[in-house]
Each structure stands twice: as structure tokens, then as C-alpha cells.
Length: 167
Image (cartoon, rainbow, N blue to C red; front, top):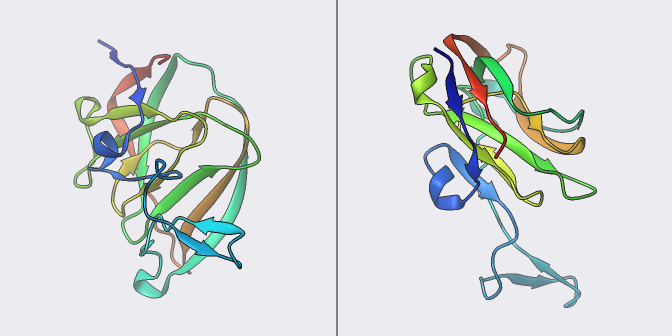
């Protein structure tokens, strides 16, 4: 039987087990005024965890085609030595995030799904299982990840496929 998974709205509390939500904090949150008072700085992540085992931070842009839901998922991936972040750029772009906690290869029942509001990005903690980028609105995404001479990407095939439903 095909497990059906409906994404819930992305929130910091619901996503905390897998990483962090990257977004401008609500009004009244602490900020730092910079550039002679012409800008506010919101520090979202003090340690991106990108340098283990001779790794180096890499910034890239992924231009993603929109995905249509429902979509059947067959595999998950993880990066044990470094984190990975996805942030929409240029316009509001929603994307779905399918994750499972670090550890052994996940079963279908281990998966959780979220959908961003178009302005949110995510930071995946090292070892978090996740599906590749699932852009609901096509376009550009800033990707921050670890690179090194040896690849750091484990791929696990799901024993039972999962159908990701529309939010």
C-alpha cells in the first residue's frame, strides 16, 4: 500500500528536529543596525557546519523546474559531514521539504513533509535525510553546502514508495 504524505506549513518548531527555518524574524526580534543605519542584519545561523573532513563552503544557485503534486517519492539522501541550505531568491518561491531524522536509512513511516510560504529557506543539519529539492514554484534557489574531494552524499531507496500530496 502506498503511504500518502501531506505537507504541513513549515514552522521553526515543527522543523527543529531536522534543522532550522531561515527567514526574517518577526517584528520586534533582535537585529543589528549596520551600514550607517541604512540596513538591518538578522543573523540566522552562526555555524553552518561546512568544514568537517577538509570540507569547504560552496554557494551555488539551482534553477529548479516546478514540480506537480501528487508526486511519488522513491529515495532520500543525506550529507553526513556537512549541512545543506536552500533559500529562494529573486521572488517568493514555495518548495516542499521531505525529511527524516539522522540515523539508519529511513522507512516510509519515518518521513515528515513541510511546505514553505515562498519566503522561507531551510538549513538541514548534517545527517538529516531529505529528498532532493522539490520546487513548487520554479525558479532560482541559493544552495549553501559542503564540498570536498570525496563526495558526501548517501542515497537510500525507500522500501515502499511514498506519495507526496498537495498541501
